[in-house]
Length: 143
Image (cartoon, rainbow, N blue to C red):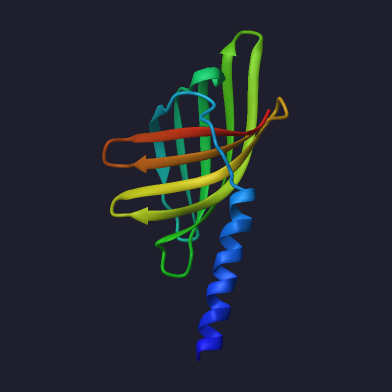
């Protein structure tokens, strides 16, 4: 029993030492964005959420999320498509995928988005259907 306890402590200690070397440091790419939910289409196998609003360096954005459900309906996976219009000559296009979970009436989503300029973001979003808002925090993974 002492040998097993010792081995477990050794593994946990070595894992923590290695993990510090590979720590992930994320910086916000832009300030938090609050978008307006323009549509929620509920389905048995797939639900669709659309939102729009101003989003920092991406300008006026339009986003569509396609959510699928896990077995008990408390979460699942999603894919998304987005477009950002900065001005008449500057357009960003993005696509991504991630996971979502329900927390009371809120949906919490996190996923990776690839942008047409070659950058990648980690998006962490909260959908609030009662207030028709989607709050998004965008962290740069690559430039």
